Amino acid sequence: MQKFEWTDSLSVGVPMIDTQHKELIAAFNDLSDAIEQGTGSTSIKKLLVFLQYFTEWHFGQEESCAAKHKCPIAGTNQQAHAKFLEIFGELKTRYRESGASEEIARQVHTQLADWLVSHIMTIDTQLGQCIRHRSTSVA
Ligand SMILES: [Fe+2]
Image (cartoon, rainbow, N blue to C red; front, side, top):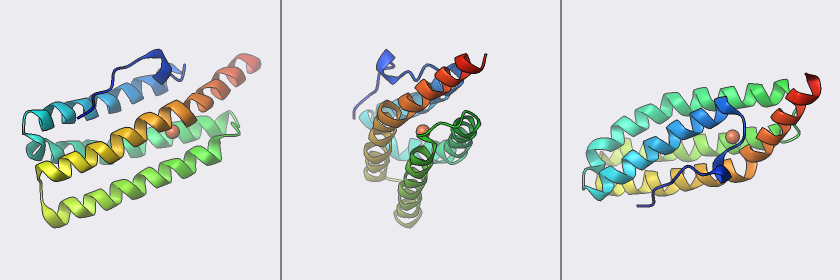
């Protein structure tokens, strides 16, 4: 399972958002470790519970920051978050129906971790640019 290293290409340049992204990446890396050690099925529940609360809160933070700074990418970002929550919902249903397994742990990692990293690099970085630009022009 792929592990993600924090690099500058993942930084959106807004400390609050970067800190939250680091938490998410660390959680997926923990899952990746667990899968490699054959304990994905015991770690998956913990990750799903964490994601349930953390992603909703984090997306809310990003969205209100985008709205506050009137960022043009705000709508696209919001739609992308809704898409993530939809995929997450499908995975939770699969988990509820089939129970914890190495297979579901892999599916969660493959579908959500890749999504997250590409979302950060494409959309959140643009959001970060806007927030930084507007913060300095207002100041
Ligand atoms: Fe985002």
